[in-house]
Length: 145
Image 1 (cartoon, rainbow, N blue to C red):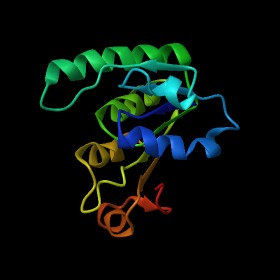
Image 2 (tube, rainbow, N blue to C red):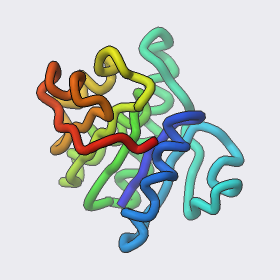
Image 3 (cartoon, rainbow, N blue to C red):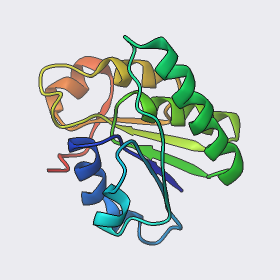
Image 4 (cartoon, rainbow, N blue to C red):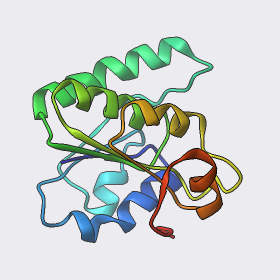
């Protein structure tokens, strides 16, 4: 299994899910050096952060993420949001992995842009807010935080 979260709140939310992932071999990807060691989330790799306003950063991040996915060939990709997670879901589709998108709890009013795009690549798309899930045809299974 590949678990992907960028820095900050996304990483903390992913770490709260670790108990559910313990039965699997998990490889973590994050954008912030030091987080995997701090949380004991190993094995792990650091990938370049990216966002839609910096197209070159998206290309750089996609190359690195696709490289990890092609090498690891996960059966499942789980992400708690942001563009690197969306890229990992797309890369996972290439190798036949199932994808799970969990939109950040911070998106209380509407699904994130990446979460809206994830409907094209995720097998399961979750919002942590019931009304947001209803409005975006995502599923709701409660909040991570």
